[in-house]
Amino acid sequence: MTVAYFRTMNDISQFSVGISVLEITYILASVLFILGLKMLSHPLTARRGNRLAAIGMIMAILATILFHRKEGEPIGNIGLIIAAIVIGTIIGWVIAKRVKMTAMPQLVSFFNGMGGAAAALISMMEFPHVSPELIAKSGMANGHVLAILLGLVIGTISWAGSMIAFGKLDGRIGDMRIKAMRYVNLTILAVIIGFVVFIMTRHVQASAELTPLIIILFVTAVVYGVLFVMPIGGADMPVVISLLNSFTGVAAAMGGFLYNNQAMLTGGILVGSAGTILTILMCKAMNRSLLNVIVGVFGGGGQAQTGVAGTVKEISVSDAAVLLSYSKKVVIVPGYGLAVAQAQHICHELDKLLEAKGVEVRYAIHPVAGRMPGHMNVLLAEADVPYEQLVESDEINPDLPNTDVVVVIGANDVVNPAAEDDPSSPIYGMPIVKARDAKNIIVMKRGMGKGYAAIENMLFFNDKTRMLFGDAKTTLQNLVNEVKAL
Amino acid sequence: MEGILEFFMANRGIIYMVILSVFLGIEVISHVPAILHTPLMSGANAIHGVVIIGAIIVMGHAETTGAMILGFLAVVLGTLNVVGGFVVTDRMLEMFKKKK
Image (cartoon, rainbow over all chains, first blue to last red; front, side, top):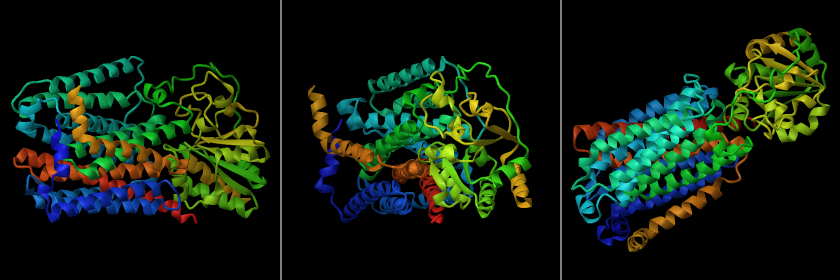
């Protein structure tokens, strides 16, 4: 391989003002990416950080169009490139602005898939053009070909996987849980690696001769991406998206190797490593290991508590209204059910009514409430619930024994006492909101269905628990009317 | 063995950069609070849209119609990743701001 990269990096003979401007812009863009990420991890600076990174990106794109040279050739097809950017911008902007906040996770997944697909396309187009001199010198086994193949494989897996994750979160694709899947997946992965080695050990004059093999490699990677995500439970999708996010970062970095492009390299690697750490942090928030998520032990369907006995007790809307109105302290535990019912606004109306009656209302936010860590904060912020009312579960738990009523709305696993009591439960050890410590518990639910993790919840059979069945939005609306009428 | 060493010598600049970037990525976000996981993931998602630069380069040197179509598609998809990613992140963070 090889000398090729380093040579261009130091070769002064290629000096021109345009190239220097380009390289300086790339350095600035890289710095802005780093600063942006850094600022994104603090609540106060997050928004500015995102914008800084966006400015870096615009600079890098403009400089590339204006100053990039490949063997002295400037960027051609500028009209078409600008047209493509305009089309992408309009579509991306409209989708990003229109989509409901509840659909945010699948949207991130969708955009991530687009990046992966772009990386795969680049590899596919570059493969037939590997320089014949390089092949004559070191055969197909060189860094250039490796970067192309890895970009193709990783980008494709990220694209296919993201589309499946998107479908799952959007409720279009169900889970497929077959134990044998992991062996199938490992086999396919081995096939892909074998194929990459096979391609790199061919003896050819020009890489274009191997184009059919590239297409087979692409198809295999699509199959792997699909099968990799299929068996993973819907509840674990955020972790998967975060993982695929870092995959796309690595795929973009491969493009950086390919073109000896520092902006792509730093941007890609940065996202690759930050994404990996973020994935691990998310797993930690759920007290699970990454391996456990990928292999998919979750959602085996309630191994332990077989045939949980007990009856659930219902409560009428008017009784619930009275109970809430005459309480001193109320804690609302919102879950994804609240979000899908689009009930966050009406929920805030209820809490305002109760506050007007002198009831102290707070929200207990579990780190993984919703579909992604932090998702619930976004949803409640959208409904104008004041930040001070949102309390993290660790913080609110000690105060729950003094709480008159805990209202669980569309949440299930995050209040399941099995996480503390039942070592055989798949969620054992996960930190929960200790709803059962409260004096009264009202659970709003559509029906007696199990939660996302598909395990029985003993909280519903607790003596202090009263169930309020129905759609969260309708029930809350009825409750608001009752409270008003009191 | 010599081949490996040669590879290392020829690419040591890039290898340095990759290793340092990996540590930087880890360091930069390792203390992020859980409420920011979603926006951070979304922001990082937008940053790997930098792949669009590769798409522009490949499209800029495309000659056959087939390559043009694929290149065009790559630029559109890359732009979707960049624009969608940043706009959606901004929208999420906008909501955090309102509460104050």
